[in-house]
Length: 190
Image (cartoon, rainbow, N blue to C red; front, side, top):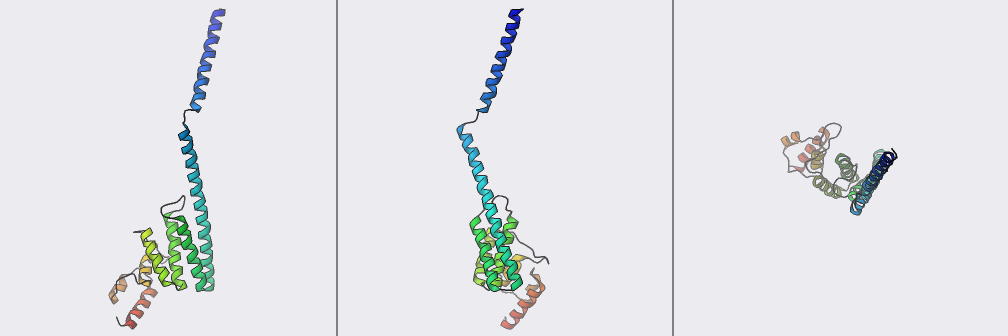
């Protein structure tokens, strides 16, 4: 009986030692390369989160300036808002970053185009509108009344072909803008 007990005890200890060895070796199955990739992933994620936070803080500053410009009607404040919003997009660079959606970026950059126009810098508004179209091809934003941002800006910035009276009806722009464009078209004699 003593031999059986010793054999059983020896078998249990040997099994425990094998399981412990396997358990410990499972912890070290990864290579140094895997560990480096994990660290690289965390670093990349940290950089994404940092870029997202900086973009949103920058955008909030531009939006605050826009609200102040709307309240005061100051062309300088509109231009300051447009410059800040343009800087936000420039710092972010191309492509999707972190949790920032394309729509969020489009709205901020579109506001910069609109604010350059409101501030009186038509050349910069045209330039940024062209950049907007290139960065967000086949995308559009719509104002609360359902009119198209791109159609409105194309009309205001002269990015459309010359129109005849009937073509104004096809534009997806506010009626007040159509009326003003008809008036300008009439007085230019075209």
